Amino acid sequence: VLLVSFLWMLKQHYPELLQARWSRWAMVALLAFNVAYGAEHADARYDTSGTMTAQDLWPIYHEAELAHWNGLNYWSLNRSCISGRICAPWGSSRTTG
Image 1 (cartoon, rainbow, N blue to C red):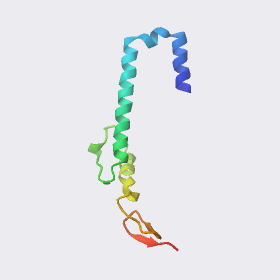
Image 2: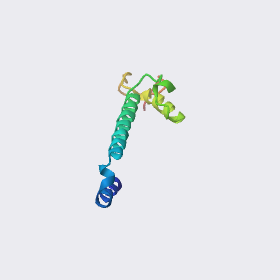
Image 3: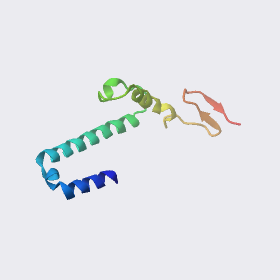
Image 4: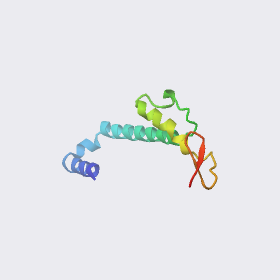
């Protein structure tokens, strides 16, 4: 809502700003960066190998991000859990009840 309101205000008061060639290129560049960054995060989210390294991520990642993406494979669908058992993230299982 805030972004739309801000852009509407710019269009009403400064229409030449949104018509400028440099601002259009800036918006296209921002959109391309957003799409590429989102695609990288989607790849990381569905990588269940747990072996992601810093070379697999963009240079602007945070150290906690690497640990987070490598930790997502704990409850992957590659492991079948027998009814009545809980699959633990470290590969062992224990019975319930």
